[in-house]
Amino acid sequence: MQEGKPGDRSAFSFEVHTRLQATADGLGKDGARHGRTGVIHTPHGDIHTPAFVPVATQATMKAVLPEQMRDMGAQCLLANAFHLYERPGDEILDAAGGLSRFMNWDGPTFTDSGGFQVLSLGAGFKKTLAMDVSGLQSDDVIADGKERHAFVDEDGVTFKSPLNGSMHRFSAEISMGIQHRIGADIMFAFDELTTLMNTRQYQEESVERTYRWAQRCVAEHQRLTQERVGKPYQALFGVVQGANYEDLRRHAAQQIASLDFDGVGIGGAIEKRLLGQICAWICDVMPESRPRHVLGIAAVDDIFAGVENGGDTFDCVAPARTARNGAIYTRDGRWNVLRTALKRDFRPLEEGCDCYTCQHYSRAYIHHLLRSREMTGSTLATIHNERFFIRLLDDIRASIDGGYFDEFKRETLARFYANGSKG
Ligand SMILES: [Zn+2]
Image (cartoon, rainbow, N blue to C red; front, top):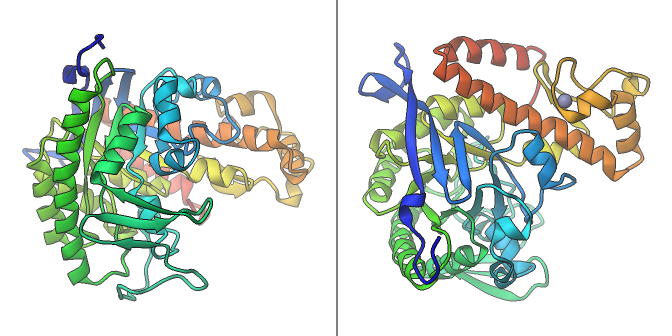
């Protein structure tokens, strides 16, 4: 970073280390699968990939300090542009010196574009990337008991603030301005998120609209990079939509690949069983030199499918959100620490776990804290669950570099899901 000069783009780059060997049924190209290990270099440090990206929605991990995240091996954090725009306001983060300094996180950060939150107001459905659907398709479907709070037009989205009911507008240019002021190392283009409920025709229109918005995002991003001198370079990832349709996904990937993005976000509505395939369709088209982020992963098997088919980074709110309700991730599956039987169980959450919680605290104690609604219960459970996912991605990375990914995947999934575990 230099005074009076625009951010230096060479501060952001990606290098591939090991490509995943081809298998008879694996998807890939040039004699390898799409999965790989590598390093993303950012102005705030390196991310060794594949990597887990913990979600710090409001510029904080709920219940856990950044220092603790660093101690448990977190490499980077993802905050939410829409929430920070609403509160405290992106100009506050800009005045503080950017997201990383504001939250005392001395490492790389991501922001999502806000499109997901804004557009979710349009249907009132809870949407994770890998959702299960029953085949219902209509562009007017709204969740029971919900009112539509977001409206899409060619230029952007108008929506009602969930905080105070006031009307707001998001567009490509507005999202870029907000994300530049927030100052994360990796940002995402403003895209239209559809649901699997939308019709094929709507998905087609939406892919084209997302492409037009992507072009505007690149132009505005380049303008802001030149204008906002003295700031570190911020990388911009384009987002590929197209729901479950192979032709639409490939077409959208070609459109995004043709633009001057630093990386790609694999987003939108994806049926769980197609997650790996959709990543592979996109990676077929995308230049290998661009890192790939899979947005909003939901489960352990989704992470393996995403890594095998070319995902480099993965964000997931599940470990923190479920921890606060007592759900604990272990190698032997996910179970709940609130169960009455654990009231007198003085073992750690997971035997052999290297996290701070398991080194010092018992199931019985965490059971007691969460039942008493004590905040430290959330802290201890979140530390364990976040460490579980960070370590999982670290272990996957080692297995690719060491040439034993397939055995590791088989053993990990067999053990995790042996008892019909969710997650
Ligand atoms: Zn633990």
